[in-house]
Length: 249
Image (cartoon, rainbow, N blue to C red; front, side, top):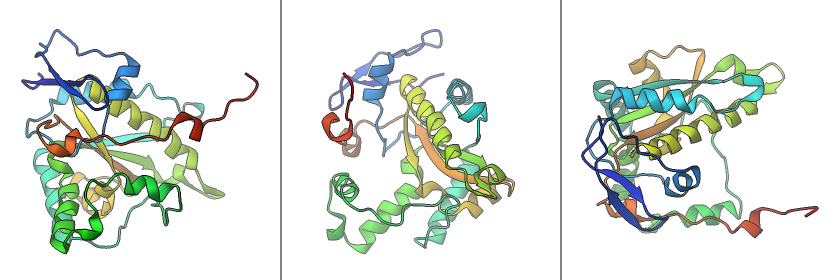
């Protein structure tokens, strides 16, 4: 049921491979360990992710909280020929203005821009046009992941007469975080991709998604290729005292 190698990170920067787990042995971590070991995987093995495992992850992720138990999320999970058709159509269309159905940030004032710059190992401004295109197309192909979980939200619930229901996105963030943590627990890697849904018409056509559903996000999922340098990098976080203040203690 699982791939030949199971992986764990011993901490945020150091990897250690673990033994193979049989079908009767579940890979288990405590919550803190799983949070610390999750990272955005940008290179995957070709090994397919079993359908039963994807179902288990999503079923367990559905325990996420939501406003008055509204549970605004739905999912379309693609692999094999349907996913390849989406990827090929994205690459064929090439780099155009995003047509995302959920608004993207228009600008990044400080300190947010500084945090984005810290993501890039290579200065993208020094890359050639061909290198930048190759990076984008790799993103379009979900970094080689064999499956993608597309997050859907009801259009009428998100766009309401008195304004946008932002809480539905907040709630969906909870279920997506659950998915990514559970995937880590079961030896998989993930990356949440806004770029995976910039051409929603392509996804809608290939997966027969109705017009009353917004295609909000793609979550690539698969077995991480830990030999790739890109998967050895870790992103920093702001120190606690920069983002949290405590009162009355």
